[in-house]
Length: 67
Image (cartoon, rainbow, N blue to C red):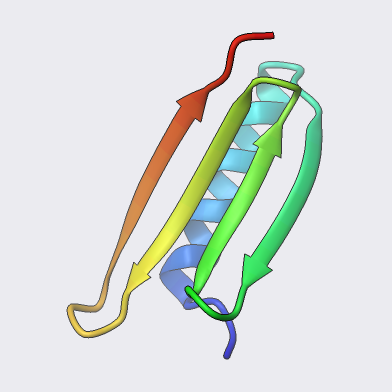
C-alpha cells in the first residue's frame, strides 16, 4: 500500500512549514499496516497523517512532547 495523494500533499505542507520555522525533520515513516505517515519534527513534535480511505479524506493530528 502507498500513501494517498492527499496524504502526500499534507506531508509536503508540514515539511515546508517545519523548515520555514527552522525545525529539523528527524524522522519520516509510512506505516503500511495503518496507512499513516508519521513525522518527527525536532525533538518534541510528532505529526500523524491518516487516510480515511472509505471517505476519501485525510486527518492530520500533532502532539508536542516535553523536551
